Image (cartoon, rainbow, N blue to C red; front, side, top):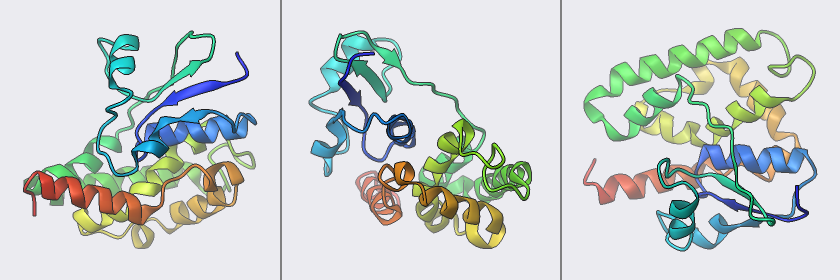
Length: 193
């Protein structure tokens, strides 16, 4: 891999946050991150043409591009958690069911975690990287789903706080208030109350 890489993503993207954490864990803290330029914008206007060129059929970010111009698609796996989480924001008629489903999946994850500090036992690993990015969205899920992750899944919150103790996570996750404000702005633009 080349010394420098470009990360195309959108700042609130939990998938982009995964890549940032992984880069930091691998000691690859220096990369161009276009999302910092786009703090107040909803989409990727400057990056859109490049994104369409690189991924014409699957137009989703993030994309990691080594400076030798060979694209590397990031690992993208959709957890069952993602679907009900989206319904909490965009489908008011499904809030109650989506909230119960969302908490149900969190409880399954909490059961898998058990009494271990991380999903890999004593070691922070891939599953932790994949799941911790949901933490940035918890306040928004709670706000629009009328639920409390901390009261329903206290072990998961304790795990999240352990993860936040890692520099790679602390510097890569987007603040919960910022994500919640972003969701409020988009909901307002869409005319959702």
